[in-house]
Each structure stands twice: as structure tokens, then as C-alpha cells.
Image (cartoon, rainbow, N blue to C red; front, top):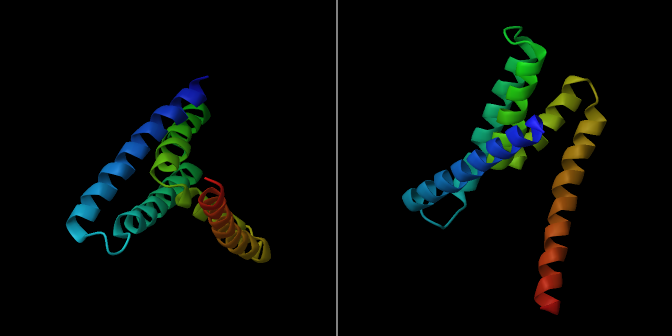
Length: 129
């Protein structure tokens, strides 16, 4: 139950941060290009890399506290801030383990199949509603 609460609280704050930052960047740079989401995805990837390495390397926290912080910050906050960061970390972990073909397949399938899925969903609603 604690894990669900931590992920939910982190996700709520991450979503609020994404919305606020995207709004501010769009107001600053205009709507001609999705600069806000692009910058959020890049920032989220930077943050998830920092946090993942930190939790992997540090011995400052006992296992339970470290697990709770990972759930709050990585799964919750960054999951709400950008799911692109989780995707990028998964791909990096495959590369780090030497699974180059799996990593490249995961990247290509994720991007291509996700684009197909969003297109199909969009076209389905346009056609039937």
C-alpha cells in the first residue's frame, strides 16, 4: 500500500510539473513546435539517468528507504513527468547488459508500433464518432 501511495503522490507532482513547465515553455517559445514536451522528455531522461545511477551506486540508504525513494521519484514523479524517460532507461539497461539487438528492437518497436497505435486510435475515433 505504501508503494502505491508513493507512486501516486510522485505521479501527481510529476504531472503537475509537466503541465506547468510545458505551459511556461509554450508561452515563452510559442506553439509552432512542441518545444515544451521535447525539453521535458530530455530533462526527464537526464533526471532518470542521474537517479538510476545514484540508486544503483550508492550505499547510503538501506534497501527499504532506497526502494521507496525509487518508487516516489523514478516510477512516480518521472513517470508522471514523462514516460519517455522510463522507455529510455529500459533501452539503456538492455544496452548496458550487452543486449544490443534487443535494445534496438525495443526502441524501433516502441516508436513504430506506438505511432501506429496512436494513428489507428485517432483514425478510429474520427471515422466512428
